[in-house]
Image (cartoon, rainbow, N blue to C red; front, side, top):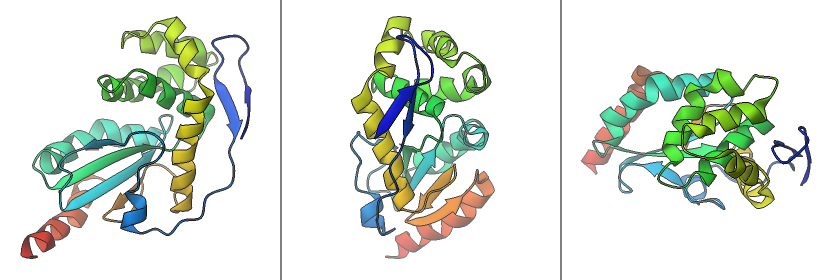
Length: 210
């Protein structure tokens, strides 16, 4: 993988060329194989429905799903043991890659809070002229120092692991965000709670009959 920095200095964000998509069959067992980083999941491992989301932190539709729909899905399905929900990185640009890197660097206990802050402050860092300075400001809300931000964004190994997760997603046919696999079947776009319910409820009912 080749990369270059598009901002000079220690606070530069990473820009890279990704390799072509990997070959993979879109089957549930293959989808459930963890990538090179620990899975970020919510809910019961034995839930009858598993949803895998591929998202990009700079994607407005992903932000809309996270802010408007995800809390209701979590309350209705995840917290009640009906759904296991897995969030996976699928950055479409260097800024999204940087955001995902910073969330991972924040640590397991602050990962979700960081993702939440980055989505809710998307307009402050995703489309500004100086994203490095903006990200330092945003990450300050999580307690991460500017020096820690710079160190994280220089972690080539972490970048490559996040890129590998996205490349695996491409192998499953992901080409836009958000994309969801609901028990292995792909659904694209920021689906509403009602649309999720139309899909999930029959799967839960079928599982109860088995």
